[in-house]
Image (cartoon, rainbow, N blue to C red; front, side, top):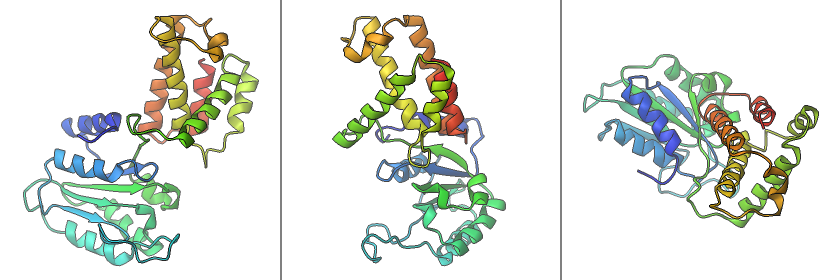
Length: 270
């Protein structure tokens, strides 16, 4: 099992074991956090055996892109027709046929229109994994026919100073409105640009701080100056807030929940 993404793994594992695996999934998240590796490992988990897996990318795997530096290549319609031909035949091993489309947003318009037919008319036991860091570049009709699963950088991967600074800034903004009136909370959420800031990251930062407060309450961690205004919360209140945040995190992860509304609800409960 690869490092991290345990929630996503458990979610899909449960779907598979109960016979509720969807025909198509859209894995959304930043580049370089293991989405494609996850898809390959899950393909193995549900019984994939060569040659029943096809991986589609803008350029051959393991080869450098021939596109000019700073410019991404396309996935042309020809590659999607190869996918359709691949799926037209029964599984060689009698199980699932699996297609992974890496950087699915790089499908050009013709390719996306062609791929839409594959989504509309699934054949046999097939599972399609679309992987993207820019899902807004996909046709809405493709987006709506896939079940979205969001991925975040695993906590146990090496941290970097840039992320640490960003988390501190997010936490500072959150702590300024936690415990204030509804108007201040709505004003805070209204100023968030959800095109640039993922709600899941905001929830994760708040969860981390709430767990810290919980540890302070039981004497497992030392408090610091920023905790002064929040130590008034009881153990039960902090635990309740953590439960609410976990519920919202799950909805953001496994459904197309409205990000703005999710953060508003979370702040209303704290």
